[in-house]
Length: 120
Image (cartoon, rainbow, N blue to C red):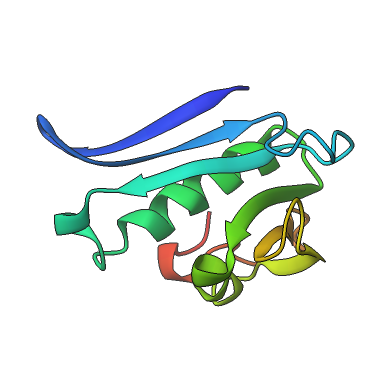
């Protein structure tokens, strides 16, 4: 950490996401964080954002993280909640921003972390 992932098709940039130690200085005990997700507007709704977040999450899990955090505004909250993230703290660091968390511990070795991507 830090690590930045880039989605591309050949030389065409599609999007990016980062895995960092901390994205909210008022919460230094929370680590690691997925941050700065960006998908080019013309390539949204193709699953690129979900794939980038999933890959960053797996990197954190494989590095030994028990939980992974991210900061999202109200407009993006549902995107993450549909993908297994839950509110850890609401209205942090200000109203309308939320710290979300996802457990990185699998219940068993055969359980896929991301069913849409198949078993690991």
